[in-house]
Image (cartoon, rainbow, N blue to C red):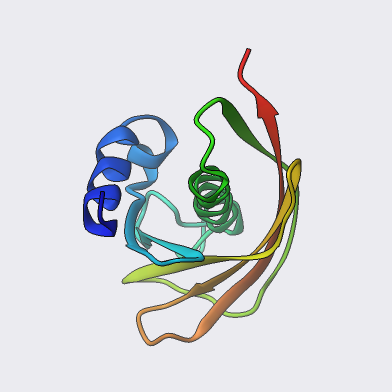
Length: 138
């Protein structure tokens, strides 16, 4: 299956839940990274009409966890986020934000991902680190 087909399958399989609420979609898949985007609008605003940090973290955990699952190449396992930290560097009030997850460490049990969240002008909005754990399905 090529990357375009994988992206289509990802977007189809996640058409519910939080991803649907936040309108998150996967846009690019490479050999060692995954990109997702999310619109910045009233669904993800803080009271002063800028992107909420919690929505940014939801986007980052989504793209990092899905990347961890894809690159583990083991359908008999599940992935869970176990720790996240990040810095918000810039406000965004419209357009889209893009989260690119790249692996820092791909262990058998734990994985560490760096997620760069950027705006439409490719300016860094947030820099986030996510640690995931891979567990056997029950």
